[in-house]
Image 1 (cartoon, rainbow, N blue to C red):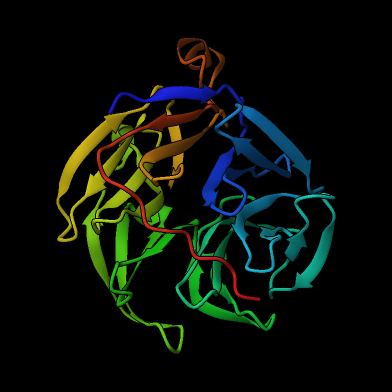
Image 2: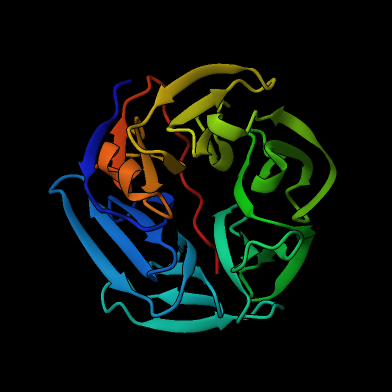
Amino acid sequence: MEPELVLDAQLDLGEGPIWDAVRSRLLFVDIMRGHVHEFDPATGRDRVLEVGQPVGAIVPAEAGDWIIAAQHGFYRLDPDSARTTFFADYPADHGAIRMNDGYVDARGRFWAGTMALDHGTGKGTLFRLDPDGSVHTMLAPVTISNGIDWSLDGRIMYYVDTRTDRIDLFDFDEAQGTIANRRVFAAVAGGATGHPDGLIVDGSGGVWLALWGGSAIQRYTPDGRIDRIVHIPSSCTTKCAFGGPDLADLYVTSAVGSLKPAQRAREPHDGGLFRLRPGVRGKPTHRFAG
């Protein structure tokens, strides 16, 4: 349970770790720098791909490439050439918003949400990108669209709008890709204990939440109780992802962000990539079906 620093990446705003099982790599982004990272745990090599615009989320695709949710739309990213190809637009003022986190459901649809560059209230939207390239507005307004994942039986979608300081539940129709009946799964104290950021569901149905400003991650049981809190030596943890050949390694991204110099001096590994083995395994990552 003791986290180790596996990559002192000094990420400005690290986010969206996800395991690419085909390539045996951990993917994640540094949002405002427009960087996609491909980390090889076997060698410790971290390859950085320049996207050229803020990128909020990345997911592997069945075609072998990656899909990124970027400020100006959804793009396909070739992992070998690093070339991006425009795939689909989403309705927004692209000069005022950016993408912020996303994930893929069991039918291969990519859910990703936005937030305002000025962090303004109610300026974000949760979108669904279907394999045919169509984009659907699923939830609006939101403020800081964040963690998304589904229960093991596929009947519940977990979702975080950070400004609400809670994790919400939706009933999920997997066949139709629709959500309904929003309600609270767990309230988060906020303040000095941190605000809810990215989340992921493990292979036992537990929900792992990163706490922005809380120097920790915590696990919730399926009935909404906290059963584990893990301290991370970085104030701003952003999201967790299970990886490795047995999906038993839990990776955690973090951010340097707007931390003051004195705080950065106390926490030299802010913006790093951390790893621990929590004793539970993850579930396989779904791939975009398009």
